[in-house]
Length: 487
Image 1 (cartoon, rainbow, N blue to C red):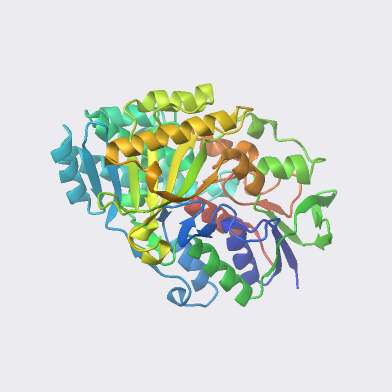
Image 2 (cartoon, rainbow, N blue to C red):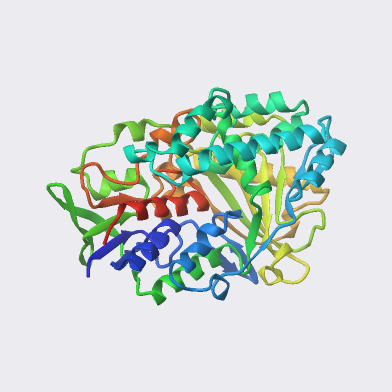
């Protein structure tokens, strides 16, 4: 039986392991941490449970199909609910917009609360659906680095549609043409943050992202986001995948055009196929330093990172839902701080995720598990102690002002996740959440490919390679690898 070694038990590594095990490989997964999931982990403290990493779940089919190809019934392992309210939006002038998953209801809400018409909202979301349909097969499901990917009818069709996909305008420019009210524009611009990008630079084709929520739906797993990890690890183990935790990989041995084995402090793991679910910079810099360097990849702008506070709050707020956004008044200046100055704006846009709104066990009765996040720059030698302390103060002032209550007095538990910790725990280069940003119109082509040109049995998955970061795209990277490998 052929052997496959997977470096990293992030969501893409787990998915790759399941796919290869089903192909007939004997799969070994090596993980430096004591737990699986990478960024998709959880915290349990003082009666509060927090999803530590990703908080939005879309395209659940990419998870459930892993059970299906393994001959299992997905609902026996993994259950989830569709959210009626996608997000509640709060503005400084007191305006509050509730984004219902029903497009008609949402469009009417925009018309009532802003100067934009319901018709314009619906047309904009139809355009988002059009971009998705035109690009999904080529850009999300296939490699952009294999000639065979371009020799298909779907590719030719996509090429003819390029003039209509807004690749030559920024996301903000497209949204400013579609809408007149800054509230609506900010609402749709914020989707650039889903892959750590700047809407004032990122191409308008990123307006595909709203369709993932409004067209395909947003969901919440029963038990929280970490249940994605738990259920897939359970599945992987049942079908024969072996996991080794606290097993940090220190190198990959190569010979001529082959990757021969994965080296850890406790030994070598030989593999006919080796898959790296680690930041591509880390792979080349630390694991195979003798390989040809990826200067072009390293020169690309990094995506944003995150500063997250996990707060156990001693009160419930009925105006908040699972997903909430408290907007800054000057969104453009906030992104200039993030990507140009590499600093944190004094009035950041604040995201609050509260899973206890649906999962009552996540917080004691009458309380809430607040995952409070702002976008921050990646690590470039800043004085993070000063920046974080100032950001915490500004976040508390902002939330307290908008909700009309002193939030700091309600904090019963606190933990935080910083860009430095993200870098240390997940080997994410400079602490960036999504590898490179998508601020260039050709970013999709500049992302590292899912295979090595130098070593024919070495493959890459995860958020730092094609097609990008976030749970759906990380799972797609594993699916793309699956098309390359034969047992």
